[in-house]
Length: 340
Image (cartoon, rainbow, N blue to C red; front, side, top):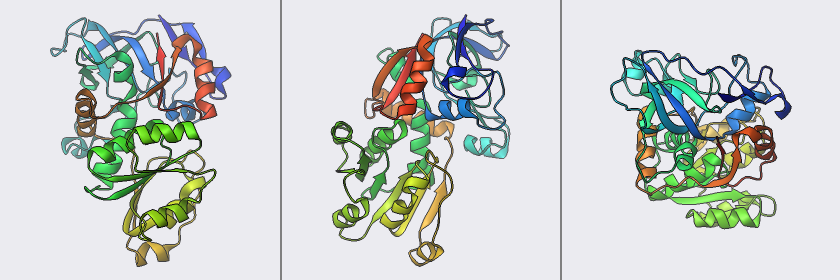
């Protein structure tokens, strides 16, 4: 088979598209012929140098395809089934897993970070991470939603406890996780304020249902948010940017508000004024990936057409270097998907 592989971490030039041995099937696994694999910023971070990532690595957390082989212990699938991969791995036996909090499992991992990923023509994976997709869902859509969707759903619903009628500020409307978060907030009856960097992305954000779209390059985010909310600020800030946006995030947060964060794209070091936290009774909440329940909830919303992952760009998987360079530039709208 052909696969994407890097043997050392670095810039996109370390990525190879090479012949590689076919995966070996174990009794609890299925082998999937991958048809589509969506990219995430996690792919970039793992390639650049996340510590302790095993090498050599096949990147990619999201994928969809067709089952071509089935292990002896697998009873729920047939050869030819069209499937999607749930990218969080977990033990299934600890208290967190038993309580439906798999992303709190002490041994949790992410496909494409802690173990070999989806950027390959074939992939062996434990059947518990595999779900059948409906006939009307194409492989590109199936591949595009899992990681960003269970992340965004967990941030808003499970961690920040978003309530109907609240006002949510979401950074990065055109990002993978941002454009899904906007749709989740609207489905749950919330007002959405979001940020973009140009007019094309502003139109995209409006098409998702955002109530107020602000250009962070030309508008004062703090002033505009305070004006829109009559000085109250927002109930939730959906953070995944980090250093560049953190100060603004704290300044637009209202009384009893929550900042929920899943990333630090522009840096991890921020300043916090504790007086604002305790006087305004605010909360800062961390969130990583999501539970199986979050995945299933989002799978249902996507299957029902209530939420749609936007696919902004397709690349042949063989053009993996070009795909990484494109995602590095930050000009994408929605998801970038690789096709085998």
